[in-house]
Image 1 (cartoon, one colour):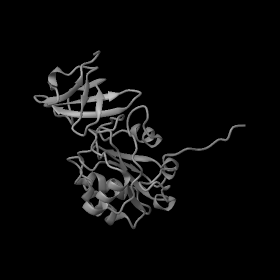
Image 2: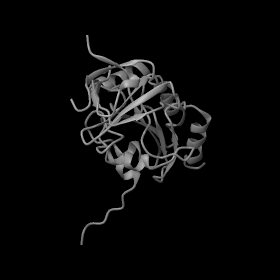
Image 3: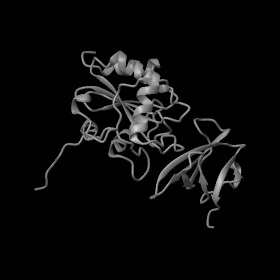
Length: 69
Length: 171
């Protein structure tokens, strides 16, 4: 089973895996998605890639590694 | 003396590569209004392909085309190969409008086309990043970005069709 983490516990620097399998390192957390504050959007805006992944605020996401680990 | 080129959004569009790997035929866009849309095959908004194709059928004979831009930057919802994307669009939605190769629309590596497009504001005056799949930019035949519609705006919404009709030649 993959490690998961509550959406609300994700921090900048954490590495996540989207359901599509794409991995991203969070550099920004948008507190709404399409104006819906029950959703957040994790964004990686780095030299490696730009990638956006929304998630329900009360849900969980797959964690690859914690920031700094 | 260095060569001086006048660059416009239309000249950038004219240099795009199609989904099949060949340059997009200039006749596909020259002198036309172009609705540029970043598309994805596995998104909740993917059924917008139906409305986009209806726009193509409705206005495609009158100097207009939709231009689909496959992009995998939003939750990885466009993961397929060019062949898979092309097949999906034509077989599932009967899409006849052209598709570019897969491009990046946000970030440090975004395609120059989106440097132009992203600087254009939406109806609320907000410019910047493309928010999600199926954001729409209307480019006039003269190369001006005249409207930006966020992903939730249906392709056949009155505000889209009105904007298209305003820029069609002879309107």
